[in-house]
Length: 130
Image (tube, rainbow, N blue to C red; front, side, top):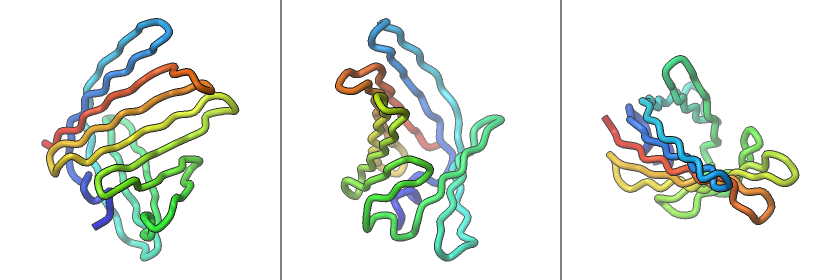
């Protein structure tokens, strides 16, 4: 089973964003649906559907054999339940997110936006299957 297969289905999410410098906090909820389309043998295509928005995530079937770069994101499987996503936004600022698969009905992630060695923001997200 591919790591992303664990996320197929409809989810309600709650996201907490903290801008550390200004002590600003923002929380919101949304519903998403993750579907899979396996028309091509070499690629898995996952669709993440938001209300009035759609994002496609492509990954290779041999995804877990090595670290890959997709759409300027570095994605690395840490273990069976943990995935690390990293993106360099510019020369100084980077985004790192850890997605943790807890069980079939609950997942969580934590993200960090850093400028060199200083944290600018943290993002906590919970995913509950509906």
